[in-house]
Image (cartoon, rainbow, N blue to C red; front, side, top):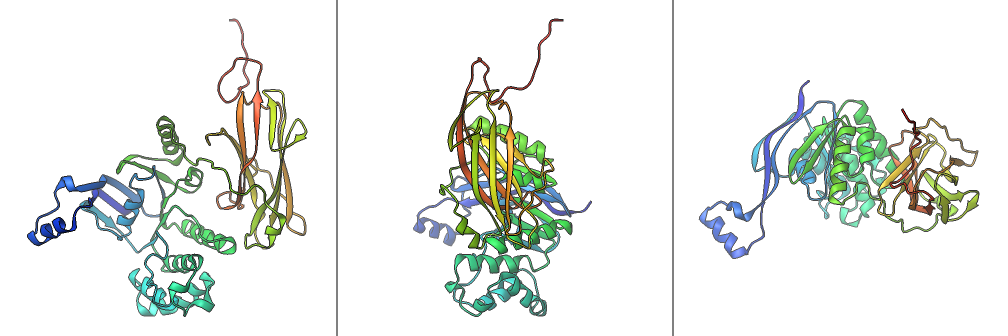
Length: 406
């Protein structure tokens, strides 16, 4: 299999901040920046990415992920080693940052597309579809400085994904914007995957990494730590994070305390309209349970606009630090949701004889697309409950077991 990207001993260093007069003397004298005045962000990266693969890039903040993507995209030069990239590259990095604020949207489309390698006649051919996809037709001849951040993102995304790239580079976000455009952008990226385009996908969401990628690259300290199948790499990465006291996909409280039904009129395609939690039939948001005796029931009400496939629902139970204890989802369990003629749906999940051991736990609810990858809505800290126990067992849960004398 041919490689779309080959990196050998790739390195990237930046000069440390220093006095302007001192730096000016170095430039005039023609002296290179000394090693002690450089910050090495990438160090001896050896990596082959075959054509047609979706490769995830994971690592802590500051590990060098974004720098690596910018180097591969040609946005910044490498300072050591070699790089070979085969084909046209489109990068979804800092969307809109390359637009000129004084130029109109139309002018920026032609500028951005030409920088991506398209000729004038090719841009002419694609122009209408680019603008139509962005959904900002009435603003296209206004200066970009008058655009909202959302409009800027829509246009930048549309240009980047309309140049028919062989390699697509995505930093952090699978889709951009809200509502209809968010779904459209997600579907376009999925089309690239189905067409066997090479995709580099950087994300802190290990869930999405595992769901989408063929291989995963873990970077730490500017070096490649591991390259392998998604489940193997994410498992190693999670173990590493647990030792350093950092959590992947840490669950933080949502600023919303409740979701009102009036949000149906927003531009979201689907949303969580209500969540109810019951312990032993008693409702509440701060409940108590008895380990291996109490039952837990979660009732999720959701709304889905017409014209899209029926969503899926998932939930996680975490400890107060955000460590996921367990999860469940309708897609994984093969449970098909239904909605009424107004787009409303209800689903219930039950846990009998709750096996969790003593401690406080938090419930988070997720409304996802039919493929279980794109997030329509999330309700963090939907409720919490505390578990008490009679025995001396330790850990998160009791696993069914038995004893015998042999």
